[in-house]
Length: 334
Ligand SMILES: NC(=O)c1ccc[n+]([C@@H]2O[C@H](COP(=O)([O-])OP(=O)(O)OC[C@H]3O[C@@H](n4cnc5c(N)ncnc54)[C@H](O)[C@@H]3O)[C@@H](O)[C@H]2O)c1
Image 1 (spheres, rainbow, N blue to C red):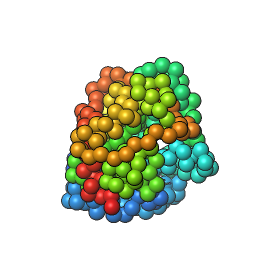
Image 2 (cartoon, helix red, strand yellow):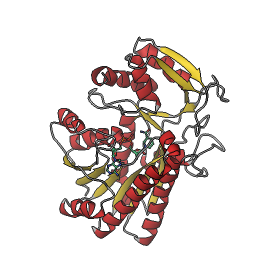
Image 3 (cartoon, rainbow, N blue to C red):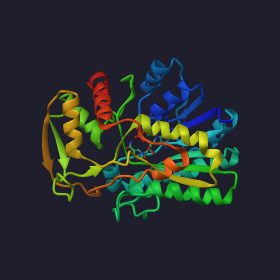
């Protein structure tokens, strides 16, 4: 039975939502996070939601000795590996930073798990592993050709798990290829608020509360219905739900399995902006500027595999995503 869980990157955006839900479900949660993209105040927020603090270790996941000690001493049953850098554009400018952190992060973690005989891992992968779409919706059999160093690090992570599970037949690994997680916890306490925002919802939030004067749309000449890029936005609480279900079902899978996590619906940037403004009855300026390097025009998931194997499907809609994001922004972005 799974009881003791390690969440790497547990104070980050998705990690903090996952930890809060795991604690609510009475699991013993241990976090390793070096605070490279999060703040210690998140622990208090998790406490505010759950009335229980997870055990927190502030160190780098690449430290095999320290990680093994936690795995052994705390008798960890399963690891959720979320700790990584995630900014696609930064990875194009500083690829080594991404190779060092994300690739050594997972390879050292696998090593620590091996020496500690921990054999269950759920890895945060990404839809960016697919690269240019050859067909839509994207299923897990689609070819993988990442367009950025960040995407490459995620593909490496998956490949490491492939080989690790071939070498160790006790290892059970699941990679979840998230499409575009957005939205916030229903408490309004935790959400996505990076220091240097690069993805859509933190940027919309800043424009909405007036911290940024204009929201910029990168590219309006794509071959989509309104010219703006199309993505599969999925509520962070749906992403968390897919993690918890994967954890419960991991024993029934052999070796390493890969699943898409999305809603299966494509939403354009203009559509998300209109919904956000309407549902939250606010307005802000929008400017269309030129395309960004590495962005693809259209991407949305085929989510049949995870439904077939685990009966998981998303529950939240675009309005929920926009509403919860604004609630979080009003409370937390100053
Ligand atoms: N948010 C998204 O849109 C998205 C999409 C697809 C995949 N993912 C993946 O999901 C995971 C979580 O994403 P997020 O949005 O919560 O990111 P995040 O940056 O908010 O959280 C990552 C956490 O990991 C920590 N961390 C990074 N490197 C570390 C290291 N070497 N040792 C210890 N801690 C470290 C950071 O301090 C941060 O708290 C990442 O692996 C990311 O690549 C995210």
